Image (cartoon, rainbow, N blue to C red; front, side, top):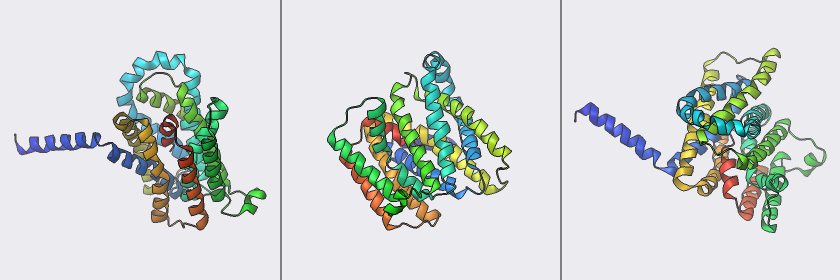
Length: 318
């Protein structure tokens, strides 16, 4: 074999080895998803929120379709038969969540965003009980209460008077709504049609783009446009390729290799990684109320115990 053939074989072997290493792929996934909030916050003056969400998923769809198309063609009848579920999942998981997340990051920090998102497992338990009539144990209820106390500590900046006077940071409130909608999306994923994951993702993205497009038009009509700069292009490129296209592929592969329960538990490191990135790249300060809130949230997750299905669904939240 000549040197060029050896190099090509080595490259294929390297990619194949990476594709078989679940925890390497999942570490990259958490890094990419944590970076989504960092970039959304850093680019807030350059790329308006609806524009960032619209171009993120439009470009991601273009990258995904060559892989998803064979599955999508085969699964179209099943998707059409369950179109209300597909429509709802696309509206919640792709459309509403992303626009609200980037809107919230206009006025709150990436650190707050990541820590509020870390309460998703507790919220999924609540929504599951309300919507799907899931049975909850006293242990799970206690865990939810502890986690939500942590979220309130972060939103209220450690000051109960802020909550009592309802003087919430607008961005925190918006991201709180986004997280609640994601919890609903996660629970409704149980009703997803029996199709290939890439088919469901592509269909959800298409629905999400159709929802985001009119919001984007309103944003443009209001005079908010992307600032033509290299930083704007880099921000759009990052959120389109890394937390959208690659992270979803890596996440799905991680589920194949180690199962949804272990994958969901591993995803709990994402808020911690995001908090570290926010402090490192954005210079955001870590305050005592952040630490207290995070301790309560993690303690609540530990007390409640994270269900396997909720763990899988809640991981893909950014």
